[in-house]
Image (cartoon, rainbow, N blue to C red; front, side, top):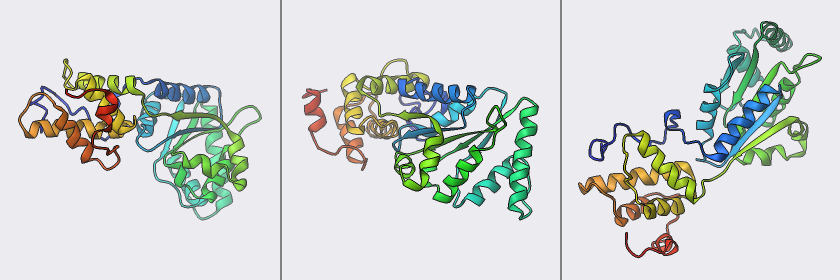
Length: 282
């Protein structure tokens, strides 16, 4: 509702991951490059971890968009409740039907992967929300990761999940899977400079050439968000709403305070962030 009011042609701070607004943050670029390098080297199982709101889904979409043409994608966004469910879902994505014979299904998947490999294609399975997978499903991932020829893996698996995934994999019964994860990438919260650049970048791509947020305001949002991109988006969006509701074309300290107070996950001390910034007035 505030786009034309602030001279924007698109919403800069929506929570839905938008690759068009991707900002090349160091940890995000490192994550994408690490996973692409792992695929190029033929690694079997890789892992992307990050706290809630750090941009895992966005990185997942960027990875998918940048997959070389020789890779066939299988994307499984919903955690499987058991190993069988996971195997059937994979088979379905590969165009195979399950007739109730589990052994036959394994053979069919293996044959399908061999056929694609003979045609110059490799299959990449991207599994989101991997921390919610059952032990049985995680064991199935290990078994699927064993599908290989004498020289190379037939299936490449990328596990995407919250830090709880590492805690799960540390359990004794999952130690074999943990040992098979060859590459790990971790998304980190933004530091102060990254957060300020992130806000400016999104505004620029949304049509605003001059900054709506002062450096002090952007730093306050960073401090209150803890550097989590999703929270930065929430706080920036709510700040713009607050200013728009008063029909102001520039933001003030009160707008930032309203946004922070209205966001449960933000740091809620009434004056800590301003005192820390060292500004009495904006």
